[in-house]
Image 1 (spheres, one colour):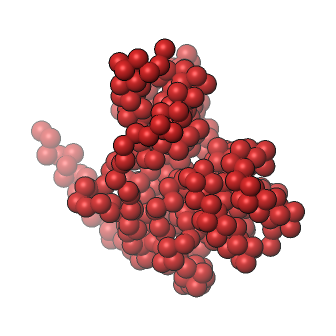
Image 2 (spheres, rainbow, N blue to C red; image 1 turned 180 degrees about the vertical axis):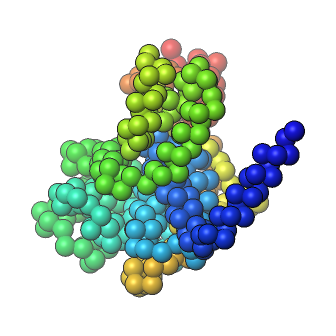
Amino acid sequence: MESEPNNKSATDASELDQSVSFQHVSSVATGWMVDFMFLSLCRHFKEAKFEEFNQTLSVFEAISLSPALNGNVYNEKTLICAFLARVMHGKYLDVMFEEDDSVMPLMSAAKIWSKLEDSVADESVFKNITIHLFVQSVAVCMEKGQRSSASSALKWFEDNYELPQNLGVKLKTIVTKTETYHPLLMSFSFNHLLETVQSYLDVYLEKNPSDDLLKEATMRVLSSQSVEGVKDEVQESSHFETADESVKNEIKTKESTACLRTKRKLLSTKITEVWKPESGKKPCVSIRRLSRSEVSQIISEKSMDSTEIQKKRKPHQKWTPQLDKYLKAGIRKHGMGKWSRILMDYDFEGRTGTMLKDRWRVLMRADQVC
């Protein structure tokens, strides 16, 4: 009984192959997949899902190399993904995206961002993000206690970019006096950088929806599930502001009382390990390292290769009195259990929220805290 529909599907596929060029169909389908992966990366960036971001990035890299793709729009999206990857790793100075070891993640992000000016609708947004990258490249080094790296980053930006002179002077003073909590660094904070990049993505997605596959998949789910079964999917799809209006109307008629999920924190510094523990050096998936000449070649040849970068991590060290001091200060400020917030305020040398919780229990047992 079930063989008839299967035979019909096979017949339809055969007729499709004869009437439409498979190469053309493959090009469209591949473009849809790239667009969907691009949307997913933007979403993971917004929700600070580090593990999911890296997994999706590896899929995006593989699909983006398909010869079926053509058009500058895909090259632009590839550059945006490369930019997001570097911002996601912005606070991890031991992650390298360039052949030059002195170029840290946010410095590499600035190189790619300079090639994305045409994708920014508002010129002030472009300048704002550029300044944020400049300031945070220095600020992150100061937070890690690497004053020499901060000076190197400052000089690198001065040699490669035309930025306000007074800004450079202020940053030099901050580095010289080691003013980690200077008002300038607070005004152009890392969290504010993430929020500004997210606003840029929202505007970009509004002009470049990239949601053909998303809409098809949403319609398929709606047609195959009951109202109760669709409720969770409605909540998830609400995060995509580019969803088709017809889909939204159908959702409203089926479930008018569906509640939207609360947005998650933009970016937590707690990183889930997704690399194989083969050695002290752990590979991290990302877009291919880009030099200045390679970025230009991407724009002209409409192609981009990908390689893996190496993530080098130092082994965790013992808890020091200074780290205990950070932990106690974080508890006083945010309260016990707010480990992700405490991680964002202090440098715990790669430790996770679970490690902070365990250390706090040790201190309590030792009667070192109230």
